[in-house]
Image 1 (cartoon, rainbow, N blue to C red):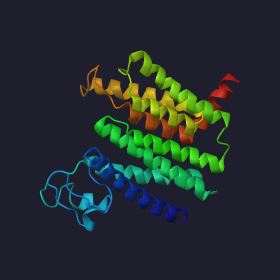
Image 2: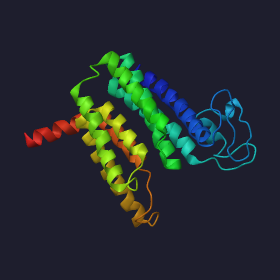
Image 3: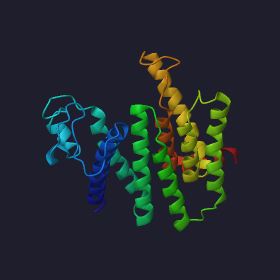
Length: 255
């Protein structure tokens, strides 16, 4: 039964990943994302339903548009795959005692994080609407399921906001953008202050490692701009499910 549910959750995640691919492109290009058929971004060919089957269509069409034979970017496939994989991980972390509201909440949050990661990776921008929607969902969920004024989450929101606001202020926006400040507020409200620290450490360490690797392989320069929102989303995902273990490990060391 666990395997069957995992497979269903994976398919759901892949479908959501396909939608997120479409949403990112349409928002960037100011296209309607409701009641309009998907199209090839190169030739404008309207896709039929069997061209839109997550993962399978990409493989069957060999990563090419059926009409113009233009190459479909590989990130379409990988977004669908990793969204499905993340959905399965969320399901496993909630198994065997599953609260439906908690599971749905976490799947929604993960979906938005994938979108933030994707959009920032492609266009180096964290959309304000995505962050405010995430924050509203977090506040709404905590309002009905937890004490919204829990000091850990209030302090977390303050920590996340002030951490990035300070950098934005002293650098006059040269180090980070306003999207990072807004994201810090959301991150802190979601995780609480302890897990926020874990998320920030993970994001900065990962960002430094990737930056050094890019420089070492001459894929980037020292002053090149790297979409930091991708590392923040990775840090947030890590802290959501492993932050508690990291905090416990650290307190045991110093205790």
